[in-house]
Length: 486
Image (cartoon, rainbow, N blue to C red):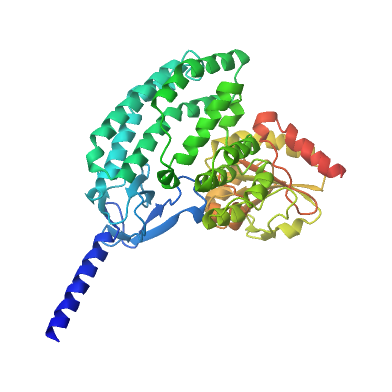
């Protein structure tokens, strides 16, 4: 009996040791934290998707006690995952951490400093931080900020700086090869590859103000003669298994497609998430397969909530997608399709009177989503005010302002200032402190501002109007007039 007991004890000891070796734990200590604060770790199982899509990430919390916290992460496979650490009252950007099953990580700092990670598995995140330092070098920032960086004269400078950052990052990563497991090395390699497509960000921001034909011609020439040869020489496609959890894979692949459209067709609209969704969808549906295809088309649809192609893409994607997480996300966030019933919201006005969609039966509704501090919302206000004045004497058209502000008094003061709202006649509604977590926001997949939505007199969603900043309200006016004439 004694021998059996000893063997049983040995088995339990070995099993317990194995279990502990595979436990994944993040501990931390930050000098500014208070007791009962909650530190949150968001694990992105499928890499980067819009922040509001909860179905594609997992959340684990640690409660602070004496400035310290501990988070247990129940990972069940051996892939590395990029995670976002959300620390209360942090005055600098949050931290991306790479975590793999079995890691025992420790992080420390204050509200203005995050120190290097320590503990088992810390090397992955510390290498990523070094790559970010290389990418955010003063030389590269100076090139991106150079006058005319968006045109042919500045573009070669920016591309050259990107090439230098890519080479430096690649060289550094190779020196760390022996410290990294194979999956983590491939993930970080894919991250460096993303630097090649970073040029698209500069082109995107400048394209919003419009390029002349001469600028388009010169940009196309530079991309063909300078950027494309570099890309062909340096770029390597990410490993399929790694790509499923790689944080930037989807965005980088979509950007690569968009730059190809600029080079081949001078199609700068392809750089914008909400433009040419159907064309992008068909391309990735045709050229990819398996879970990579499912991930890409889900990413494209969820990243383009203002596109009027969402309905077509969603209906077609339902026939293709097998992954349950992708299915759930699309079903939840693709409910604002033209012709489908609008969500019957419950929101308060400034007098705390409850409003529902059904209160406006038979009315054409224009929703304007905004928040205090939104610069683009301020720019929209005078344009939208002109549109509203056009229907001032028409009781069939109602303009409703919806804010994601969480502070009631802040919201009321913003209404009083008139910076974000159009007129006293506009109905101003509040999400009761829920912000973008309010059901109306995820029912409309609204996570950016300003956003305009239109509901017809039957209570159904209409096609999304063009932002009035870009056409002085012509598209919105045309859509309202057509609804009035029906």
